[in-house]
Length: 217
Image (cartoon, rainbow, N blue to C red):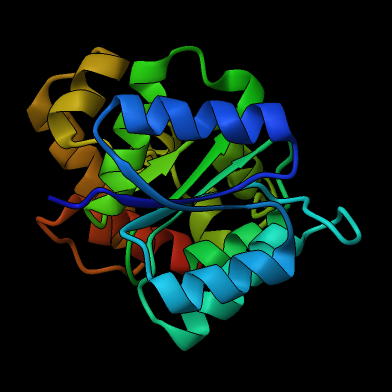
């Protein structure tokens, strides 16, 4: 069972709360750090099953968390990272997502509404999947609005792409958008065709491939 977690958060009460929440759901917290340098060192040395990382950490409170995560994944490819932030840092978020290896998630703190939602995201990322807040995906897609292949998508195909990027299965997309699974499969095939991406039965790989494509344009 994948259950070794590292927490990186500079606010003591939130950091302590995350530690207790994770422990209450059966995770082993192998470290709880509060700065970018500490995070990088802990990621490389401890190699946790998943890390919950804030974007803005000391010493400058800009993007140390994401930069540390990116550098750690360069040194240890595939380290699962779940970003938990108040902000969408598009440049580094796109670079992290475009890596294409290991589990990746990006949640916004004020849009995590219950413990079950958060714990599900942690487990999904630890297992190598994706857990993306729809608002994060919307901003990444919006920044590519002039991308010719992306512009070729229909509004419904964009809806499917956004939910797909959360790491959801075709069945989950079907329920969310009130479509039949056959309609979702058709839209998915159209998306890959228009983006020149080969279809795959592995939903997580599909999502990472799409995000990598968007990042490369």
